[in-house]
Image 1 (tube, rainbow, N blue to C red):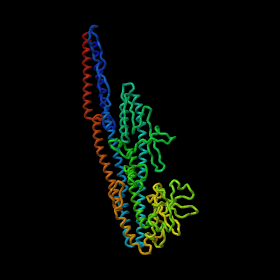
Image 2 (image 1 turned 180 degrees about the horizontal axis):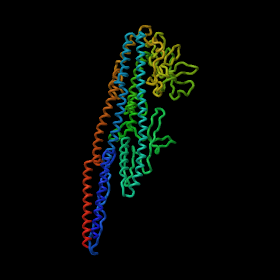
Image 3 (image 1 turned 30 degrees about the horizontal axis):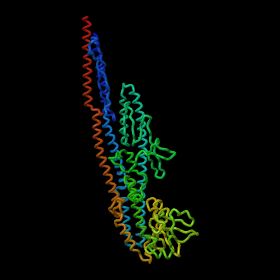
Length: 608
């Protein structure tokens, strides 16, 4: 009797196990198209055994099974596939973001297939060629002025668009930081909730685990992460090598604002010190992203590199050392290339209109002006009332030329490398006055400083100071000469003797067509102004193709890993329907088993 009634319990366990398995299968089928859902698999286990001793001397135990139970409902994942997938997701996000930025810059440069800016360069050259034929013709002078103004305005507009796009990238960085913080906080909340549910060892928090895993996948596309789950189901995350989600909470990052550029840089507040102004940045931007070093991971790092840390200028092209700091940033590099081209055009035209010479090139000038040299230490400049410098950066040399006095104070106007107007070779406007009008002028610095000494007037060139961008001929500090706009005949077109300066037009044309420019300090192939812009476009296209190829390759790798993950975590409707038939058959078998035991018991009871 006992065995008979005990068999009913075995049948009951079979019914309950099959029913739970059917419920799990139905849940899988219901979520077959749910993003982030991980299939659940039932694992059966033996219930406890009833142990009987037949005799005290018996060494073998007699055991009677009590049926089947649900040992676990498995949350099917492969941690190795997850880790590989998240790594490739981060890399793919890095290169796809870089490619997207280069594509956007190409769109800005092309300007309706490049016609606007490219045509402004061609039109300027055409105007130069026309002026070369008749330099004194006011109509052709006016045409050159208009084309120079158009070139300036379109260059400035394009440069402004680049700067605006940098600001747009900066906003994307700020939004990404907010997204990372939100994800981290939510992962911590899920950690706590999962531990609460699973602490009794009875239930697995399937839905919350699915959400957490999906958030970790999303986070891996934004930054380089390492996720580790402990035996209690708590996931800790390191982000860019620093603790992010830990047992105490989420260590949120913040952004440091740069008032000069308006850019924001992510940093770790909990590792920084506001009192000492010591800030630990989240991302180590070496501008050298390499796969072998695992430094090419995450969309945010790509945005930071492509945005750069300042607005690119021609000074970034002054040396290989300067260029090495910007060459990985599409935005800074293209800004520097554009500014360099503009500055070259401006200086070529201005230097032909107003030619300069070294102050010590002509001994006659030195003698006529009573020029002398004296030894003055550079650090003494500005400390003595009788010694000061008007313009230009300090020279490493200790020898300075002294020219005359003003208000009883000696003027140090230049070192021996300084330049003055070469009035024997310069050109004149219709008024025949010196100094001649330059076509492009700086907003805050005149081209020359007029110095009187030895009964002679000398025009000392106010050179561009590396340390002061306001002295540069570059985009943002340069405009068309107002005097020429008011009276075009003041444009230099005559020689000192009054003859038409046909050689000036020829010199302008030759300077434009000659191959004297390189795209950057690492470029060994010189080009002229007409082809410089094309080299810019080609270089950008080459960089874009590199990013695109890397992105496509990583997308294929990522897709392959995702397919492998889906074989583990994904729901197959065919497989689940097979399981449903299997568990339904098991349910029916358990039901028939119980019916047979019931009938047998009833028969036995009736016989008794």
